[in-house]
Amino acid sequence: MSELVARMDELPDDDPLYVVCRSGGRSARVVAYLAQQGYPAVNVDGGMQEWSARGREVVADSGAPEIV
Image 1 (cartoon, rainbow, N blue to C red):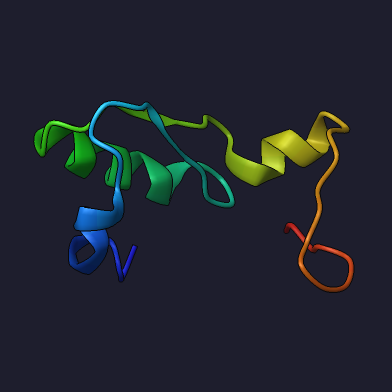
Image 2: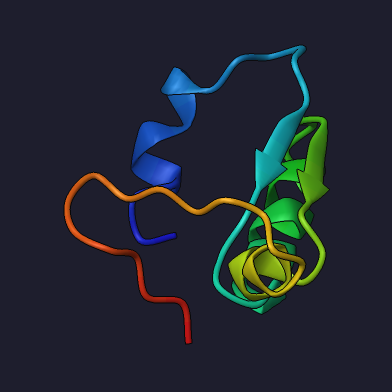
């Protein structure tokens, strides 16, 4: 979130942007901002907590991911 405005030029203009965070709250705010800017953005409801709770695989760059 802290880098979003500075990196807007890196976002595709016409592909949907799926935004995810731990629980879905922060990503909802980012999606609202992106939508105001004209980007097709979708919040991943429930975030990574919901994803993990449903038994879906979670992969991290290093070590075991911790989603609390």
